[in-house]
Length: 128
Image 1: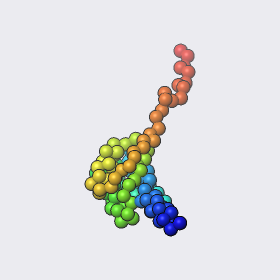
Image 2 (image 1 turned 90 degrees about the vertical axis):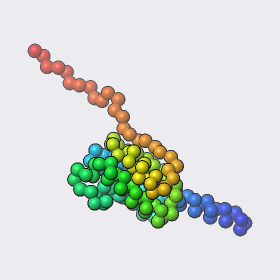
Image 3 (image 1 turned 30 degrees about the vertical axis):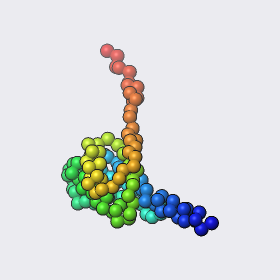
Image 4 (image 1 turned 180 degrees about the horizontal axis):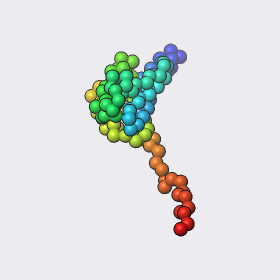
């Protein structure tokens, strides 16, 4: 009985260390939503890393935010993350670089980019 309880405790500790990180790459900004299983969610953007106006859209800002996120994740002792990308943006590669520099293992990368399939039907042309 005691051995089974110890195994259950070990499994629950491993679940706590896995976190899900949603990265929203927009044209003007990069936003990180982190969801931990037993605590509050965390939101980091380029604005919180003290980048203003057009500098928020740069890959350097995304990399700095990823480094900050990695530092916070190491403090909370989460070693493996699941990374989910949303939106179109140039900052995807720099996010991966920043997380690698902060020595965090990425378990899986999921891409949830919306792709349009031809879009709406165009209006009928005006008669001459």
